[in-house]
Image (cartoon, one colour):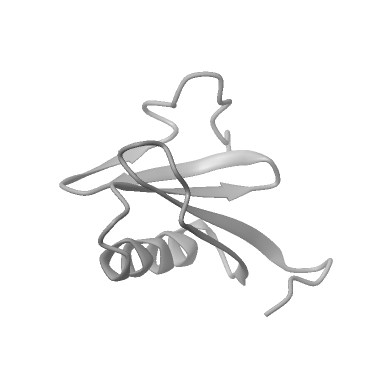
Length: 86
């Protein structure tokens, strides 16, 4: 699957507890909410990942963790600028 210029392209990174990234996916989605739904399914599918990061245009949209969800607009990982909706 490829992202066209007109698409909203998202990068999904599945991260293990040791910081390794065994899962990476790039795909278009209609909006952030649709991308987050896909990310939840991806996190469930890949049990070795402890969290899943969703990125768009070089900015983090959200970080999903096993057991809880952190919205990037509320709490960002270090050295990451949250997506302000622009």
